[in-house]
Length: 191
Image (cartoon, rainbow, N blue to C red; front, side, top):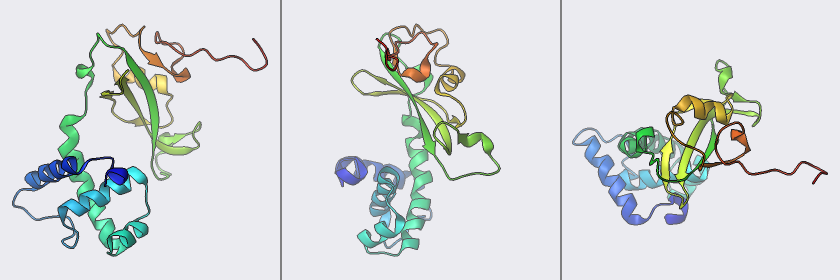
């Protein structure tokens, strides 16, 4: 299960227990044929590996609609259980060096939401800024911004730069104009 969910079995069991505790004695929203643990594995596999629901149904020996119900039931529960574990701006240690990067989290095309369309990526989605330490530990995740915005714009809007010395932070060329360390890029056909 580690290679499909990126979590060890004990982590999956702890996450499953946290979801079960949150639901309490109420109605179990996941499909009974799968149970909570397998519904969690199905959901994490779907979110992590982008596997097609029909393929997951074949793997787990159930119908595609059962897989769809499991994902629809567990995803919001997963979000609410893990919400307290998302590092906020106040959690960023100013004494450490950080690597900053932005990513476009794709979503389906929304004709009524043109702000989600990124011309650079040629798709719709939301822009999320992420900071990690040099050893790869997650330090901060921003709130989502419309996908049409550039990385540096989103970083400024997030508020993480306010009152911080970012001259030792590392970033890519999407953050030119900031005080962060940006890699030098050699122009074509020039020294």
